Length: 419
Image 1 (cartoon, rainbow, N blue to C red):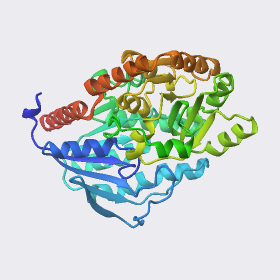
Image 2 (cartoon, helix red, strand yellow):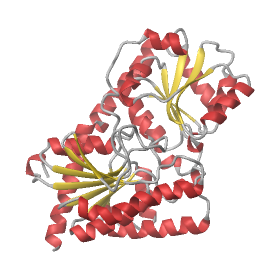
Image 3 (cartoon, rainbow, N blue to C red):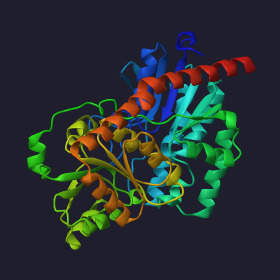
Image 4 (cartoon, one colour):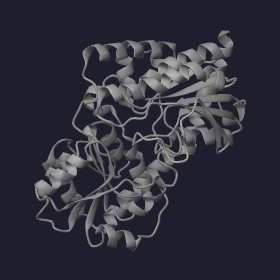
């Protein structure tokens, strides 16, 4: 189906996170669909991610409407949390789906198709309810493979809970008209679970649209944070169990013979305090911690990166995961070190954008940093340019929004034919 044949649709999006939270995919997709002539309504929570606190300028109430980039945004209450408490995290993952199940069908308005952005998997419940009451098919987008990701990230290891989530997943996958996944590994995982092959579509993530802007180095950043005159290997993102950033500290110890090399860890998360304490206790001086920065400012930080680091723990689940920072790193035009197994490393190597290292292996990471440091500035620039070129040709929003539009239109057409 060509773009010109796609009729105007009323698209509803159900997502627990949305702008101004730092997870821009659904915002970019929604705005892109509006630009293509479709009417889009997003049902989401009051913004609270990643800190687990309601953002300034917002106050929880039964619901709130606002307009963002031509998209009607309906905000519903949530129990905000970013702690390690299983009870509070469960409340976070259950509260918004519960409210969306009650109010979503009423506040969403008429729709032709519903796109659901998972995690959490519990959004499958309001997805099915809204779909039934609004007589519209739903497409289920999988960013994290539940329940497998929960024990892998140390969030849940209760067998009864994991079993219940697995059964919920089976139900949701059966009811969805189509399923989109972010990697070939996710696709295989669903096929192994018995999901019909024809229902699954691989749609890689894209980066924040400003990420590929080239900006001059800001000397004030270098002076304030000690970036000038160093070979900066930069990680930007969450500091959690899945990221295994203690591995970076161990690699830093192995690189003490290269005094110009430093790791720059930019972000925050539940393990931030432990990591900073560990670095001080072990006397590790070639790791620099920088607080999370606004997404719009990231090109200025990436300008000081001699290499960008994609880093996940060695776990079978993460071998089929492509974290969003992979695409952001490619888009930025900086060379990449992928310290992760499987699909993410394969993507970086396919793009000729950098090097791979074995996850949870400090020596392998240190060796990759040595190899990257041993390249000339021109050679590193070639890697960065190749990554940006690959991103623009295969992963840019314009390319993928067109694919989403065609899939949604196909689902609407199939649902109409089945009535």
